Amino acid sequence: MTGVMTVGKVPDRKPEGREGPPERYPKDSKHYADPLNWKYPVHTPFHARAARRYFDNPLNRAKYTEEEQDYIDWMIDEALLRFGVVEGRSLEDRVVPFEKDLEEMDLEDLLVFFLGKDRLRRAMKIEEVSLSRKEEMIEGKVKNYPLRLDLGDKRIVHSCPDWERRSGGGLFCKHVGAAFLKLSEMEALQILKKLVIERDRWIFQMEPEVG
Ligand SMILES: [Zn+2]
Image 1 (cartoon, rainbow, N blue to C red):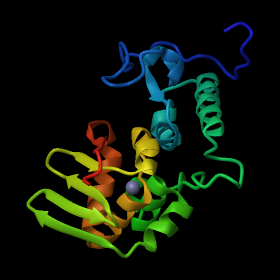
Image 2: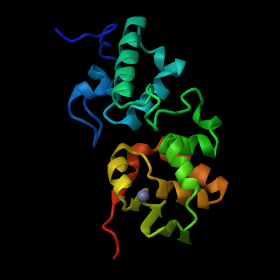
Image 3: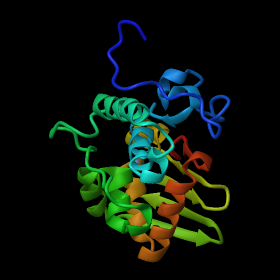
């Protein structure tokens, strides 16, 4: 690590560490706050925020020495800063309820997690939402943008410029937010919690606009 300023000490290999990168995750260990164990990926704002949440859990921290904790904290904070998630009042997506456990999060907390506060406010103003439901499939339009929420297949298919930018990081655009606001609160909560817990298994997909 010569020439690179770091804090703490790179964590040693741990018995519960991974042998290599998880499927569909970056192959370069520099994208992991714990690089030798391939844990705490921080390659997107979404993952950096999740890493912060998980590493704030004392049970997870306890697996590391104090120096190793310093290193992981530093790596996660570096990524958050780089993505503009924690500091800087001009950036809209910085507000995340880190301090809450998933179980304690209400619908607004979860929507802020996926949207950021400003985008959530814009989602709340959208009235043109028409969705129909067939078993595990919720499908329709938000404004003129097609949207499909396939709960069985764990897939959200949508198309708009903001979704194109954000979906790769596991984040929503305002249309997807508006769709969740249209569901019953209980169902929206249930799906969003699933999305957080099973986020590696969900696919956020772009679909060409239906003209
Ligand atoms: Zn959209």
